[in-house]
Image (cartoon, rainbow, N blue to C red; front, side):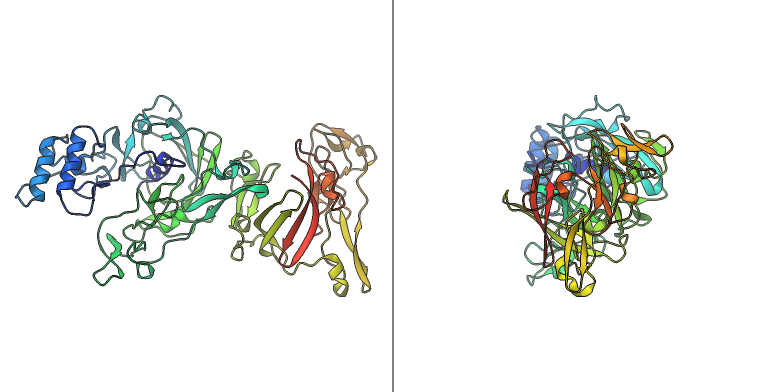
Length: 563
């Protein structure tokens, strides 16, 4: 399936429940699929299905039911199929399907309400596009989406940063699309994820995309479903005469399978997996990989695996796509050559910029930042997470509990191995962890956490760090030759300072203090308070100061947090 077709098909699928089954491509002339069978055999049930199509009760698919290739599906075509089904000698000649035709001319047949056009990133590939998809972006609002009730024609930007290309298209999309990370974690984690992942989590950690299990090979699959992969082009996994699963000729059954398990079969090494919004699609291993790494294989010769960013309104979704590197674009799109954007310069909270290998761009509560791949893993299985940009650290499972609220959460984080509490490190130089704003001190006789002096007002701070506090909406900034004063704008200098003194500035009432690993970070006064009372103030309006317990391995640390 084409670059745009894969994306549009995923968005065209309903987010929660499919109101009607999506029309899959025909298996063969006189053998429509989906129902009645699509098994490669022409039967009376196929004739009935095409008769229903002729009277308008099924979506028109000329490649299956126009058996005399005259441009329409009629009752005569259904009769011809029935005659073939009972053994009479009749000729069934249907028009070629769109995806079997060659672009940019693309003369193949499509279901009613759509037309056959060339793909945006490979004009030799053709797919069936709705009337909406033939509009020229960004003017999409008038595009036809009548064939997809409940959806509207919307402007979509597809960017492939590594290729330096950006494509604007129109697609029929359900209103209110949002990325998983932007959905309400205390209501329902129901946002969109990249293919092969499902939106989960919730609670204090928020909503995250969790990778689903990848299909096994056919030899490892279990009968009778036999949802495995085959390496030979055109072959699918099915139950053989002896009851075991084996590869051989047959139809693909992936589309229309229950989401998110997607247990159907695909031909030639592709995997049946959940698409962007929960439909089941046949995808290359590349396309169910995790962006931005995108290192999986592609079945089509000449295609390579690239990271693609799709933006619809305020929603941005990163995924991986097999793209032919020697292709051009069609007239229904606007293509712009662009340099890869930096994560730090991208717009929060969507954050779609580039990051170093092993990291992805994410909203950190203040802006866009490059986050280790580890933090995108699904806890509690964190051991294989990517921490290559955090030397000396590995991906560990962190459990957070809020005793007063009876809530808990878990996530993956790059952390130093062998974490110990301060009081347990008397024999190793008092190098254990303390809560923020404290430092582990002592000797062989014992180690304790000692609070560091709190930051004073901005008026008493010194340049260049200007490590003083200001009120809401202000930051301590250089003033005059050597002094500091509160200003409405400026740069936070806290993160560049050295612990445990941490004399830098923070915005809007936050304090610069040592974090639990000795670095410097901006904290609300609450987060530097004493547990379990935790009575300090929070910088963000609406947050409250609560006692939490963070557990890494066998170590539990009591902290105060704004939630």
